[in-house]
Image (cartoon, rainbow, N blue to C red; front, side, top):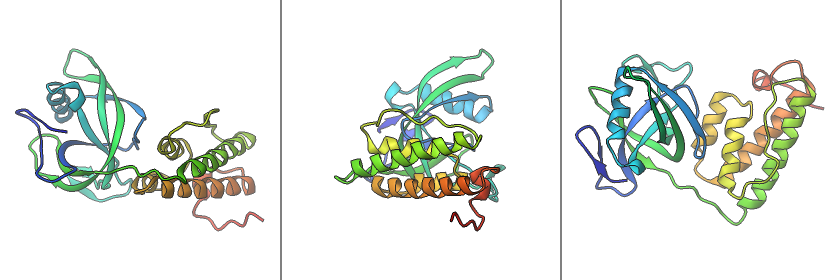
Length: 237
C-alpha cells in the first residue's frame, strides 16, 4: 500500500512494512470476515474521515484486540496484542452528527512493530504477514472441517449455544482456519493464538486439536460451556 495525505502516511523504505491507523477493540477480526462498526468517538471519527479521503483500495485500518485483563497501555486503552487484521471500509452510512456506521471487511494480517505517538487516533508501524499454503493444507483443511461439524453437532445435542458449520468445504484452507477461529466457542486468548500462528498448516492443526479437546470436554460435562471447562482437569474416559 502506498498513499499519502495530510492525515495519513502509508510509506516505508522497508519491504512489507507500512504505517497504518490502529483501532483497538475487544473483537477478533480475521481475513474474510465482515464487521459492522458504529463510529462515535471523536478520534475515530477523524480516522474514518482521513481514510475516506483516500482512494477506495487504500481505506484500511488495523483492528487489534485488547487483553481482557491487561494493564493500561496509553490513553486509558488496555494493553494491545501485537497481531491483528487490517480492515477495509466497504460501506459507510453518515448519521449526520459526526457519527457513522461502517462495514469493514478483514483483508490481511499484520504484526505491530512499533506503536507511534499521535495527537488523535493510534498509529503503528506494522509488518504484513504472509499466508503460507502447502500441498498438505487441503487435507488438513478437510480434517479440520470434519472436526468442526462434529463439534457443532455435540453443542446442539447438549443444548449449548449453536454455531453454524458450513455445509460445503471452502476452497481456501486459510478461510477454513479462520472460520474455526471465529465461530468456535474457544476462549478469546485461544482465538488470538490462532490468529498469531504464522502458517496455515499449523493453524489448521491447532484448530483441530482445540475442536477435539472441546468436544471431549462437552461430552464429559455437558452442563457447562466448554470455554469454562478448558482449564479444568477433565478425564474424558
